[in-house]
Length: 87
Image: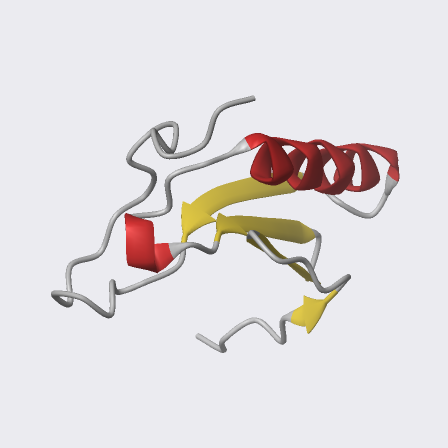
């Protein structure tokens, strides 16, 4: 089995967004806080999901989390809302 040839769609601050072979991979990219989300993360997710929805070549959207945490080497999908951020 060959590995997908992931191509970055757009650079974001809080997520990664890549496509390959009919799959869109959107991942939380804040491993230092166990991929906790904040309002900026939600806005970036919305934009990426909208793009994936409008791309007729995409049949699957994979939602994941980047990692591991540089603090302790632990992987996390998403720990929830970042409690340090209000808004």
